[in-house]
Image 1 (cartoon, one colour):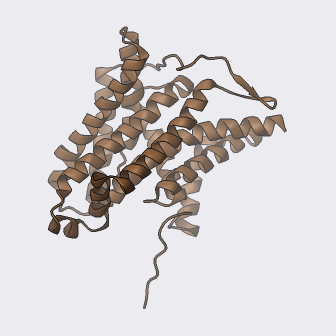
Image 2: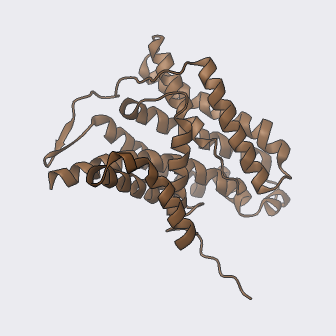
Image 3: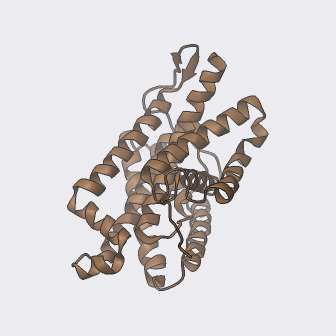
Length: 290
């Protein structure tokens, strides 16, 4: 029983990271119907910038927010320099642009930083906490708490604030939003900035547990995309549920089968969702009349 609980705690912790990445995918998708495959690079930026600032002597409480701000600026520049000029292009073309941006950011990170693995200390110590015979790291609680806080904050922002409602209006009908005076370009820029900040937060929270390097973004983007697909692309609640489920499936696969198959789980999940339930668990169900 303690072994099963250990897998559950480990899977939930990792799944919360995937959920944050999936939330970033969801935010961009809702605003522009574009799947931003550069999302994983924001996770890398969050972890790498924090690690290097901390190594340079910056306190962790200052290095982490600075890294999130840097990632948000990169996200805004991605929208302004790559996505916005190609606004009239097809969705496939925009997706290819995000893939190109991912490759560019990964290469730039290898030059600006280095190609070594980095980490920084956990926020509140390294001693594991015992839970009914299993253990969880204190940093794991930060990951879980961060995921919950982002979900609640994002929900309140999108449903209770004027700016958040403008973002939702832009997502629902861009032309109608323009007609009522909403600056849709600004809403898109805000969405990319928020998405990048959420991804960077995931990197900051996860790095003390999973470590970080210049090339972790590809794997993180794949896991986040699989989580978003499983939960239903476009659904914030689905992103959280999909991330947690993917983390649990990975942990159970590594524990009861072999860790060699763990990374294949994301591919299997994507294939199953595409074939069995393309809308995911919480995605919109559309009916085609013929």
